[in-house]
Picture 1 (cartoon, rainbow, N blue to C red):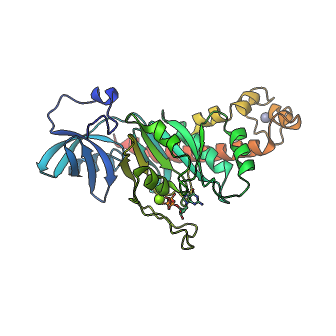
Picture 2 (cartoon, protein in one colour; picture 1 turned 135 degrees about the vertical axis):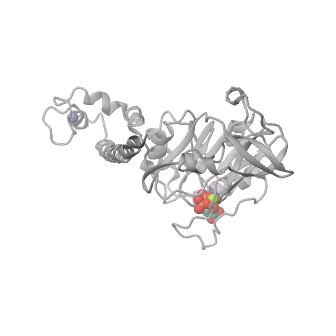
Picture 3 (cartoon, rainbow, N blue to C red; picture 1 turned 90 degrees about the vertical axis):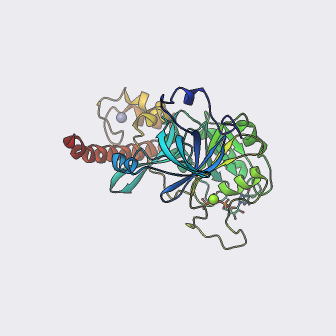
Length: 335
Ligand SMILES: Nc1nc2c(ncn2[C@@H]2O[C@H](COP(=O)(O)OP(=O)(O)OP(=O)(O)O)[C@@H](O)[C@H]2O)c(=O)[nH]1
Ligand SMILES: [Mg+2]
Ligand SMILES: [Zn+2]
């Protein structure tokens, strides 16, 4: 395999520091303290020098999709010496020690937001993923899976087109092998995509179809599958036989926003533009007199549900921001 088949391009050439190294490789899966790395010289198990852990408090550790430089230890082991700067990343906020950013995958051309067209279908959830993906330079694409289920597909299709005019949407059935060529088409020529979404939407089934073999474990559809069960437990990068790279990820129970303020302005530009005409600059668009947003709702220009959702997301982001400022204070002191 060539580096180009692994997604290598000019952007990364310029990131290589003028230092000696034995190979350039891409992280394809993460284990506790080791990584699987793919390169033009084959597949390697990679370890990381201890200083990576000490210096970064896990912040600069490689993730799936990252490009690294390594030195040979033996025939199938390398030590990672450099993590090349990322083109972009998809992150979420995790609750752990305070508020932390968890980078799910790096260096993406497409962020595939996968939803099932079954009773788990939820426009608001899709909106959250779109908001978060707007933080990265990758193109969000909606994958609406399970078109084979005859469950009000028509109205769901209409809801998607109405809510997400600017995001391409692919309607497929991974189970019945329908529509998958649309994904193949986007990824050929060494492009990288990551499959994101809740558990059970069919991410691993899509991988199996595109790999032409059952390489990933999927939920047993004969009744064993129950909500909240995560079948896939680690992120993993696959080279598709049709070209391109696709990353499978474990289902996310809840996607929490990470510094999404900017993206919320973009996604709700109609509301934020109207808000400039409210009488009060800090209008909450609830009970205030002279509220331009409320007026637009009364006139039927904006959906009241949309305003509710805007307010809820905004509150969530404000809370996150407070958390970040609070947690970053002691760090500054230390310097
Ligand atoms: N009817 C129907 N079922 C599907 C389709 N694609 C996947 N499924 C079923 O949905 C269930 C979940 O599929 P998975 O591929 O394991 O889902 P996942 O998104 O990888 O789930 P996690 O690994 O837990 O995040 C399985 O029972 C699949 O057989 C489809 O197109 N139609
Ligand atoms: Mg899976
Ligand atoms: Zn207002």
